Image (tube, rainbow, N blue to C red):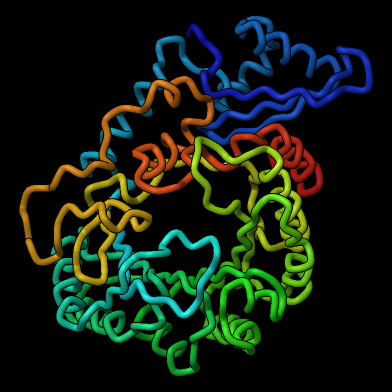
Length: 425
């Protein structure tokens, strides 16, 4: 069988202190996620073979390993066509990776004023109990296989929880199996709400963004004194109820977030239901700056060292089969007034309503059958699936490309260190 190197191999050679035959070579395939590290003569051989596109320069043993890892593929295999066929399946709703995901905004109102919020200026809308009933009926009619994944969003969804409970109770009465997650600032939980979330909402995970310690967090988010401690107490109450909590640290270039990250590492490292990560703040453009992403990486290194990324085997971006739930016609974003829109970042992108009950799927702006010319030649395509669609369309001030795009070399070196420490490949 004739073989060729995959188009989605990324070769990185860290600076070598010795001669070329002693160099280190790191190799990552973005389709399979396979990662290898070579040193010395093996490293030099791999570098020459991959750089020149000549598999025959490898030993038989390396050829077998490279085939197994997806670095070498049959000559006739067209990887881009496979990815575009998968994209077409997602956009038509026929992919096994799409369907049954409902992001529901119960309100656009919020008790905080986060400086990075993309919803500034959005008119206040509240979901009524009537719309909650219509939403439940819509979900029941679209829950393929009798199962639904629900995400409660806002605004601050805890400012309007009655529709959440109504929707869940109606799904349960209809025999629909479901689980849910929520994005919240975490300052409004009560013991009663935590109990309701576990028993009726079937809440599996909660995402909370922290912006500092104590009054720094409160001033940044525009919350009253005592809100930070209330949030921390709620995090503990949630995990005691068996609900996972994901702590998010939004980072902008030059902002000193290390004290917060160190505090999180000290305060929560012993709770297995708490994970934490830093992410770059929203910004327009193609990609985040390398400076910003290196600062984000430095924060995440602290969290990884403290064990907040669990037993993950890869620190590199993972292969995606669907870049965003909004690009499938079988996944839905539902506004407080019951409209269906393309993306929560653009509530004006309305294409239907939960009350219309149309049989034919509406053609959405987010659906596409091919990748852009720039994406088609990018080796990171398998892990981003074309990037953020709302950014590509210019409908919101978002960064289009994979956030990690500018720091792939650093991530590969970090993965090599992790592999050496934990024996992961």
